[in-house]
Amino acid sequence: MRRGVTWLPALAILPLFGVVAAFGFAPESNTENVDIRHVVEDIALRIPTVQVQPSTQHFWREERIRRGDTVATIMLRLGVEDQEAMSYLLQARGVRSLYRLIPGRAVRAVTTGDGRLVELSYFNADGKRLLVKRTEGGFSTTENSPLLEHRTMQSSGSIEYSLFAATDAAGLHDDVAIQLADIFSSDVDFNRDIRKGDRFLVVYQANYSDGEFLGVGRVIAAEFINQGKIHRAVYFQDDRGRGGYYAPDGKNMRKAFLRSPLAFSRITSRYSNKRFHPVLRKWRAHRGIDYGAPTGTPVRATASGRVKFAGRKGGYGKLISLRHANGYGTRYAHLSRFAKGIRRGARVEQGQVIGYVGKTGLANGPHLHYEFLVNGKQRNPLKLALPPGPPITPELRDAFEATAEQLLARLDLLGDTNLASLD
Image 1 (cartoon, rainbow, N blue to C red):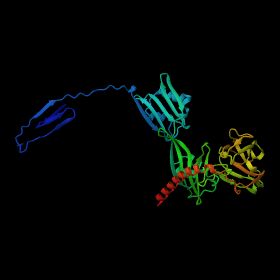
Image 2 (image 1 turned 135 degrees about the horizontal axis):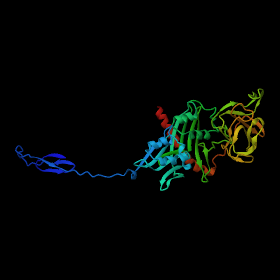
Image 3 (image 1 turned 60 degrees about the vertical axis):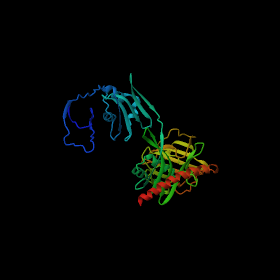
Image 4 (image 1 turned 120 degrees about the vertical axis):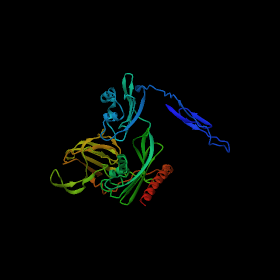
């Protein structure tokens, strides 16, 4: 390289980085006759060369799963060009959970410069970290439960068509909608009570690990405004680890019986003294409520109790009969199958899944036939005043109020923020 430099008084040169010149003149100096010379010199630039071995350099990459992705397309985006690794991922039993891809979740890989896989990690559908590593003998796979970080989140929404549609529009996981319906199920029948314009506020925990969202935790405070009536609930757990949802005044949100044995459904036939039977083709009494739902929909016990009967019984098809306290009983008919552990004498808890919707017995389509009995006689559960669950006890009152005050303040702040945005 050749570089030209103009020499002036007080000149300085910094090799390789350019030229810096300083100019200094004495007062009243004559600068018209300054001797100027041009000097051209050869400067040899030494550029060090580094030999890079691609196979020894490791590169960390991350790709988000897109809808329609396969393991092969993700590996391609991750820069994995390794036939040995691909054969292992396609054949090894331990990596099967990698094929249950969840859109939005990340797959992370460490590769060499020439595309050989060194390590692969993915949080699978069970919330466990799947880790594939290259070893001297090939590859190894492990699954472990990650250390979770619980973040408190909050959101709100308005009902247009359904609770699920509203939570989806608010960017919430379906688990939030399921929990909301469960919390308020004793006061609001989400099959028939909700209306357009109903609103919800919710404070919940979200589970993260290494910055990756792994799912929704527990809803810890919620408000649901149904047809202008405000329902509020906070979660409280005592020092023995027993928890539940309570209204701000300490009343249990759970009644002794849930309003419906299905979380989401529609009533297709009501309790009636005279109804035309669609299979028998004749008029007869209908001493229960029919809920239309797809085959396989989970059926919940509406109250705690014991299994009195679980098996086939005439027109009921597959039937579960439960015995509850104080002379109450419930029946769940036309089931496709029973949940694990459901047999005569088994103890069940309120809200526990005991069976699944079907069309066994005298049924012209999949639905649940639900009966409510008082001292052995069928009654209309939609017209009964159901007894409440146990409230907060006096010895827990102070601890409950301290917890409730903080959670209700969050709901108030969220509600005020929404009102401000509307204004």
